[in-house]
Image 1 (spheres, rainbow, N blue to C red):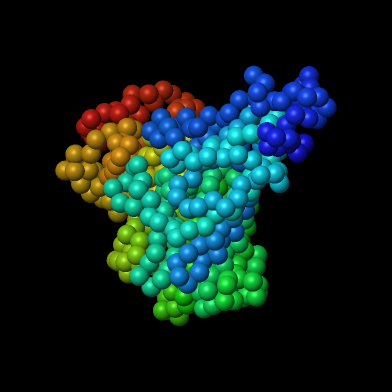
Image 2: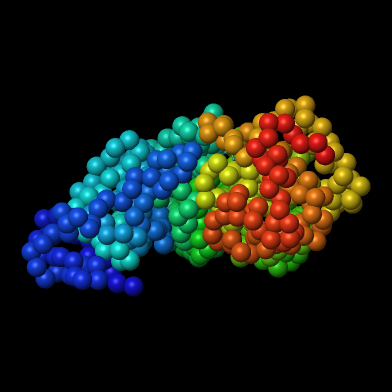
Length: 481
Ligand code: ARG
Ligand code: ZN
């Protein structure tokens, strides 16, 4: 792949476009004013959240460097490797808050402005198909983000014990790093995380540099540093970092042995010494879900436990759990739920947020499969019946059209999960589990829509399922069983 020629307008007088669209540096024509070079779109085309994501390029890799200081401030840098998908005279990134101290495209300072949550970069000439690198230095004190989709703030959290962590679903990734903030543009990630002495640090993927290895330059007063590589494509909202005084990355040899992949958790001191019993069933859960969904999609797994987070979130290879979830009797079921999202949500990602039932319905169905694994098929039937009755009482609306300002409503979880139980009854175990396994495999590390899932189920079952899906996804009433 060619490197892009992306230069500030002042330098552009020496470049032009040759016949096949590649940028050359031979004449006095400036591409930025040429009609074939235009700004990338300010949104990627999501029907619910039109300003999320951007057009005109495809991110390949993010490198995020982040140093948290004891006073709560963060100094950060991001390097974004992208490929242009059109001739670009400029492009947007999504970014809210912070103060930007420098922005370069391929090593050259370029003009930029900030328009709400759009970071607007101009003065470049990048030819369709060319690679380019955007490097941005920024700093500030991270602030909670008012999501368009949820009634409570998300993004960067400052926990009661000084823990720092990120929970960004669906729209808060761009509140902590500049990005193309939509699951349609997945990319690999490197995280370099620095913190004060005594802190543990974690991020998605594989730890390639340990806390303390690089302590000299870790923070202003010395401290800790770790580096993490996420080598499978990841949606921006699943990127996370976590820091906590006394936190540790703790191996789980029992689960690692059972699952055949590395299982490790990021835990506060008391849980490091005495991990909850359910946590050691992670390996058994991975095996159980593999039997239903096909091979676990990544090379490692685990959870990060923090105080000050009200729920749980399926960050890729490192799901986040609020401490009260871990101490609750239903912890085991939330563990299964977030684990199932590694297949459905993380590996197979949404193409548009309105399809959220494809994430939450599937993860909720996994809880029913765990009942079946533990207690057999009669208990599974009873579980489905109980949830059906509860869903009727709740009067859930259609899961296929959730309210944009309450995206994670009960319907996408419960009616979405019950849809899958009903589909299993409708087409039989063989066709049902084949559908789930082919879906996981065909759309792995990519994106799928509701229509993709329906088409696949019809292909496997060998018949039209249009009416079935219509009433389940879009009907006002929960269908009769
Ligand atoms: N996807 C999450 C789950 O496992 C919930 C997301 C909504 N909550 C949040 N804090 N973002 O169900
Ligand atoms: Zn979920």
